[in-house]
Image (cartoon, rainbow, N blue to C red; front, side):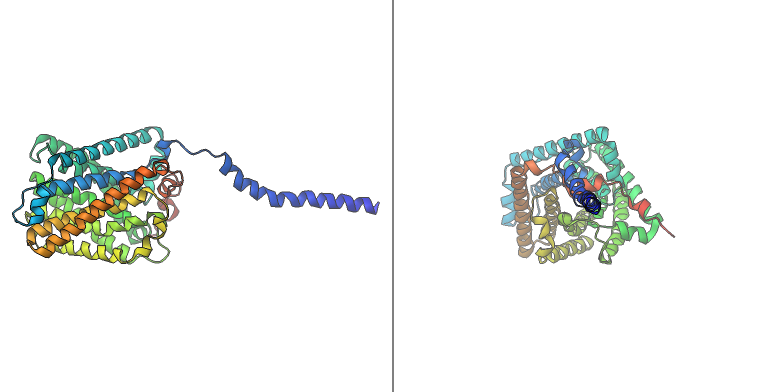
Length: 387
């Protein structure tokens, strides 16, 4: 009897011990093998408007370089010799890409509204909602057949600026009501897209001759930029709210003052002292990031749509340098303009090549922004304000 009991006990122990090892393995591996990737519209998010933002910014850069200039430097004369068909081709490509991305996002709003809502409530995803409107503003300003004084320009400006102001009320209202504790949790480099949206809108309004509207948008954007700039400078360790693959968005640190210099130039009528101060600030931040390549080491291991975040800030800096060179009329200023111009073009061409070679992974299921936009966690509910 003792032998039988011992055999039975041994069998029972084996049966109990076996699931303890196998159950975690099955629960971890099973869903990965059987899980199918979501459809394209579900994987698409507002972060892909970085592509249109870069192309529209480049089109605006080449339109600015093609304008008649007061200086007689050889560089300017050579740039004006470029055929206008090249600019029209670039502008047409930017328009096509922007319309395609806008259509995809409209379909996403219709078929996957829950994901769009999650993107709107996320502290990183909501900032990318400014990107399509900034792209449309840049495309409108660089349009070769629409005059800033025309009625279509005015109607389109209002249609684009109203959503920007609505997003301003949502974001800046939260910062104002919930205080610095909330802002210190949600502030990240992508938050500067809200400021850039106001600055680009202010520049477009100044081109129409609406100085008061331009000053209004400029003052709102710059007031919150000062708060955001100080908050990002004083962020604590462990407060990084963006993954390593999204670190190219750090280039937005010098895109914002670059656009501020351009917006103020349109408002004041010339590249005066405030515009030069913003330009020097953007140039300093650019040099600070260039000499820290290890910051972007992890983000460059594998191609991601976040790489497109390199292009638009460089284009903005090249734009500001071209206006600075025209205002200063010096050899050094024009040499700096050419270096930044060539760099911005090379980065854009490289990104286009990398994107063409990695089209199969462009809408990747493991995109960090996709995971953030589908995450149900909201900082509003997770970290309530105690004030």
